[in-house]
Length: 185
Image (tube, rainbow, N blue to C red):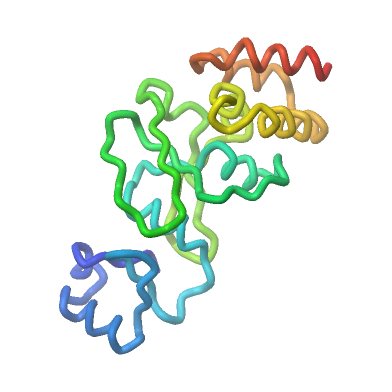
């Protein structure tokens, strides 16, 4: 079952007061402000659920996407989530770092995946997009994260042409990605 919010309680077959009563009785558990899951729901990453519930266009990015694709050993302190620039950044209880990406390039390398343990989906960037973003935003996330990710990606058989195709479509990504590929090649 997907997360239930007071505004969507009727879609789940209960009233708003019924939602709060179910939470008080222990049939629902509160995972974040205004977001509830059934008490017997499978284990799931609550930050992923919160991000997907707060924004339908939420997209896992940067270090969190690289970690999901097993391209880094770094454990992000917060879930990195991209939303289109100009969107309101939601208030959240979880450890979520909201990033605003340009609307013109927001969907490049983006796909929807199922959140493990739920029937809910969330966006995530491809390994190539995540690497290009790490190079593009290296001042914010650190150059080592990008370099480590591209080395691991190449070791697993990643094709430089597919990485350059994505990097050439993003601002400030092509040159540093090309330099890293030349240095590692």
